[in-house]
Image (cartoon, rainbow, N blue to C red):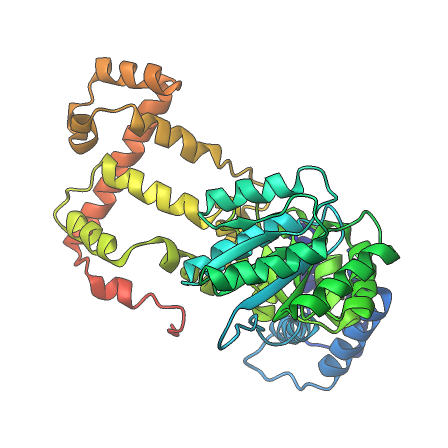
Length: 444
């Protein structure tokens, strides 16, 4: 995510870090290069200019104390300004205190509206909300069917009336939600390849009929300034409440992400980082600023872990590790939990200092699929007692998993090495106290 932007910014910061002190000249040289990077990233020209002016004013007006290097100072200033540019603070969607909370999803065709609606439905249903998806896009071929398929995957009902007038569909879906005791409606509306008067009139009419709690504008982050221009036009017509950036995992430049808040004046509320329906994150400006500067996002990583790792299972795992009884069945459970958290590359990018080191390394998520296939081809006895895995058994497992004997041998070797390391940790006093101290808010 935004790898190209991160790499270029870090190259500039390294040059500043090599300076003995900050001067007007090296600040000017660095910010000139920084401006070029922002423009290359398709950041709005005025946004880029204002950003550089603010950084320059702060850098020239800040006294460098002896304990801080020029690189640390300029990085801190840029981090603060990036955070401010992205919105400053976190903005949650509003939930109605009583009655039905209604979220209207709008945007151009191809921006990922329908998939976003399903992702939001999953996120809210996981939080205990009783959600209804409404298929109000009657124009795009298969839009209704797509929403029904996505709804079935997350066990969320979908309301549709076929190719009836979208205004009628919108009104009837709210009545249906109230009758069924559902407290949240997410409405997928029609998009177009371009903004036209008919589309805007329809959206405005639906807004007037259903009185949505919030309107969310969906932006394809990969379209850069085109996305920002359409966001501005939509806001002038519809006056939406927040923005969701989709396909951010495929955006290496960051033009839309860095420009849209400043140009439109509406907060970014969600970012989507993948195709899976659980790849939707609430947006935190400071966290994205940290990722852009290559500093990772350990808080989001810990939150993902807390969502996907069961507390009681963690206690059982700890007990097994203490007694050196960790086996391939436990290993398989951990792999499945990690896969739920997202792609390996996205997880690694959240670890401070690691993302930059592996930026040119191909991280293959299929490696986990191969490991799963190998373990699934083992018998219960083999999973629980890895010592019985002799040559003939390994040959059978390789054939059953569609892998090679070398792949099976490599996994078993790595597993045994991991057990050896765990044994060493146990001997040095492995305890839950060590885990409890690894908290995102703790200072080291």
